[in-house]
Amino acid sequence: MAREAEASRILIFGGTGYIGKHMVRASVSLGHPTCIYARPAGPATRPSNLNLRREFHSIGVHIIEGELEEHEKIVAALKKVDIVISALAYPQVLDQLKIIDAIIAAGNIKRFVPSDFGCEEDKIKALPPFEEFLEKKRKIRRAIEAAGIPFTFVTANCFATYFVDVLLHPHDPSDEIVVYGNGEAKAVLNYEEDIGKYTIKVANDPRACNRVVTYRPEPNIISQHQLISLWEEKTGRSFKRVYVPEEDLVKLSQTLPPPENIPVSILHSIFVKGDMMSYEIIEDDLEASRMYAEMQLTTVDQVLDIFLTDPPEPARAAFV
Image (cartoon, rainbow, N blue to C red; front, side, top):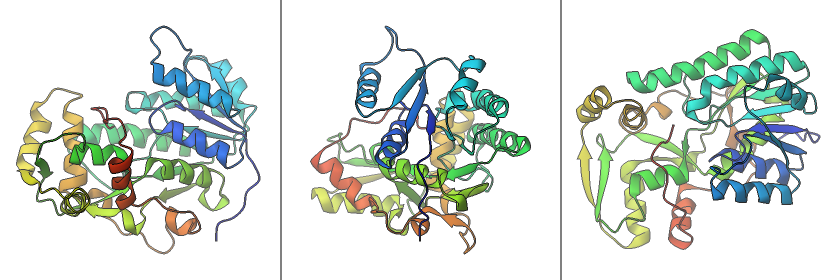
């Protein structure tokens, strides 16, 4: 049974980003006074970003414009909130050390959720390019623990819309689909809007304080072969599976220049080794769909329906 929590004042870094925008919308919909800390808008700001800012203004989100180097501005913002969530993208992972310093200086934050939202880095070991990235995320976790900041670490696994696009290329008329490894490894594909809602819930949940929460709903555990077969059923099409052997991914991880070597290493971890399902969730562990059984879950099957009825824009190349 989920515990009801009073409204918390929430500050989100990266709130105009790919996953951050879903957290902002979820925070507002769940009744929390919400603000975001974002870079100042300028001539180079994408139209989609400007549209998001207008949307957020219209629903009552307070936007604080500033850089991560502006320590005093961040501290002043933190003093007005209870919970901090970071949804900063991969290149800014270590910049979270600046947020940690500001949280320490502010001294009032009840919970910090750092930008994790992927695989469980404390339980897996990946190919070197991905491992180097995971080590940065571990560094952030250890810095939070050492500072004594109340935290929740989130293992959200795969962003479903993103990876459906990466794996199936539903906008592509081709009848070929690439399969990594033998296609049997199980992954966890969670809908981005659900990740946003779960994250706001765990950030406010006393049970999740100083704990890791994994998002692993049973209906969203799926292999590449199962995903392709489901897509074939829905579209009435038949796809030729083109296999990329494990050794080819390993070789690419060794020969491609950075950061191009990171995505292939991630594909190897998720869809060849099955790292997301490589450890058990025992009774004492926190799993979001068990914690909030009342929440209506979006299944992988329903995500594919979205692509049929209201196709999202194609995913970007980088998914770290």
